Image 1 (cartoon, one colour):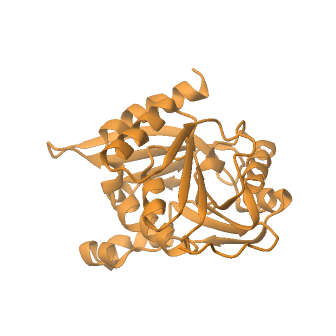
Image 2: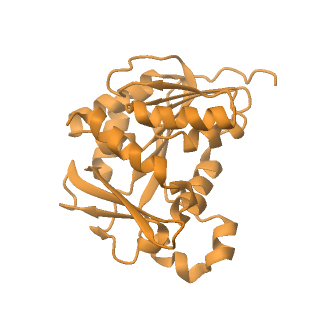
Length: 264
């Protein structure tokens, strides 16, 4: 099975599961993304590995002048375009591999949700980071959502309630297999699961690849929980996740002077 076919099978699951309703996505990922986004009025955004466009829509609603979203899977792009047809936001979706896209433009922000988790090794991780870098304007921002490099090897036990679990085959080994499982309630009161594999990378590998690609001001941010999530579930519910988060956000900058923000 090719990589594209593999992601098309995952897209089949995304077409039936409402992953956006899970606590981890609704109250942690979305909240932290919104908190870390730079001002977007008049700015251009490229999202790589956009999946079904869930985050593309959030970014567009934050005021970005334009959003170009790319994913390897034609099935994922079809799902994203279906959302666009139902709720037009002016997002452009394209099919393409991160490793093969070249330079699509000079963007103010590149957002890459879990792109680096699909590098086969450190060399390919560096290649991905260079592509992210090359698609930014001087002074532009990279915001990347990544698997937590300090992830517990067993991030399944106790994490099921958040709607997503992870398990690392070999801790602290770059490119070790990492299994991700979505757990989403269905209309009958049961739980539907969607599992797929990606790769784990250490903090050292992530920071090395980003710096080697040319990024500066590299910062790793732990996720937070929205006030709504805290109110709905309480602080005790979130303790495990906040102490051992499933994900982190990486923010970095391409050196250079940013052009003035266009008038809205």
